[in-house]
Image 1 (tube, rainbow, N blue to C red):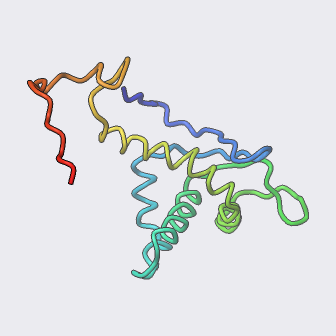
Image 2 (cartoon, helix red, strand yellow; image 1 turned 180 degrees about the vertical axis):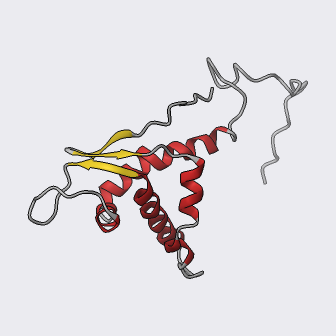
Length: 145
């Protein structure tokens, strides 16, 4: 069952111990705006899928991050989120992965839901209906040569 969050309220996500970000929900408007981000439009046609994924994640984060905690500059002073700081944050591999899992993958799970088989509440085929009749005889074994 698809559960709708009718509030669309921003949520806090912990990306690493002591590092939290407040993110806008992953809405259609946010995704459409991200897809038309200038950083994506200037990527060369030869850019790899990996390069595109990083540029897209950064563009999405620049739109989604509202606030954060536990992030500072080189001197250890807290800084506010801004485009350069958000890009630098996502350059840290574990943070990038956590952002992908906490935020981006939520939207992708819906995409996967439409590709599933029949319901299976208590086993592999419990929710599916039988469509094939049982075989009447065993198939012969292949001859050995």
